[in-house]
Amino acid sequence: MVVGLKPETNFAIDVGGEAVGGIGFTLQPDVGHRSAEIGYWVGEAFWGRGIATDALIAVTDHAFANYDICRIFAHVFDWNGASARVLEKAGYKLEGRLRKSVTKDGQTIDQLMYAAIRD
Image (tube, rainbow, N blue to C red; front, side, top):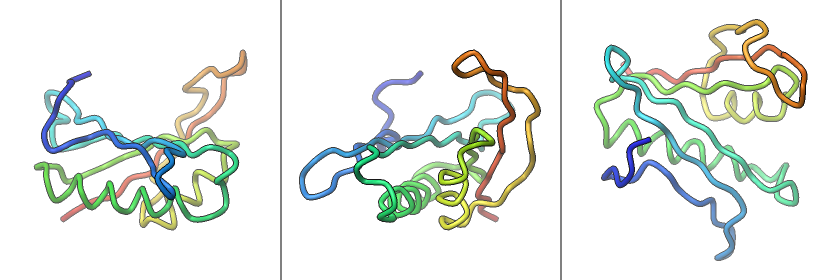
């Protein structure tokens, strides 16, 4: 992980002066240098309010405006429909399914890959 990138790549999600989640992106190395992976979370008490979608739109716009990237992608556990909807509402498109690509809580599961592209 590269620390201290400017402009920033990691942010707290703030609601009324309270940190309720986090969002950030990681610039990819080598031949993937025009791509970034984005990730986010929001505390359960704040689910269903559009907070993650708004943060994702803002940080996606920030990443495209401040870095020479043309693609931002995210992986979602296949059972996490709420996170997939956040990505879709923010304009990300489903690119595919990564079969049995991660193991969480002792279970090997599929991930869905979403991406936003800037022409």
